[in-house]
Image 1 (cartoon, rainbow, N blue to C red):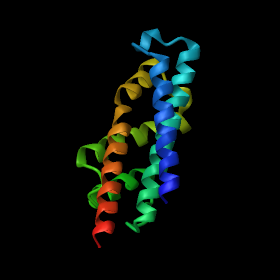
Image 2: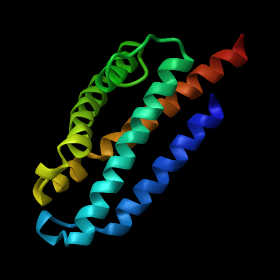
Image 3: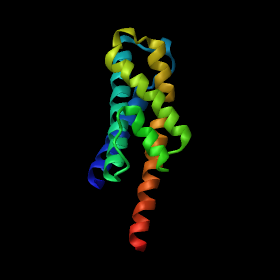
Amino acid sequence: MFEKILKIIGNLEKYFNDLKELNVKSAESLTKEKFYSLSMILFAILNRAIDLGEEIVRENKMGIASSYKEIFQILNRNGVISNEVAKQMEYLVSMRNVLAHEYFDVTEKSIYEISKKINSVELLTEQIKTFISRKNATKKIK
């Protein structure tokens, strides 16, 4: 479990570095190339966030999610992530679905709005790291 989670977290860190390198300041500053680059980076970040959540739920036998949004509800119910992060991730999952299935309706403004909220994935990652640390500390005590 731990190796897979570390790989996912490493991927997320790389994608966030790529996002910073794009240096998008506004929807109006998105050239065609930056628009598509930003779209793909956001899509990759959101997919890996879902993978991370799924892995934590599965490995800790927290249940079976029937949707991507439910992954974050399960993590919240089990004290892994806060209510705020769960709600933010549910919103981002819905935006991920737009990127995946309704990409023809995505505009510079909508992609920029998603990019402004993507830091919720960093909060998710930090809260999952804290959960793992607590769990490992508990194991050492026993």
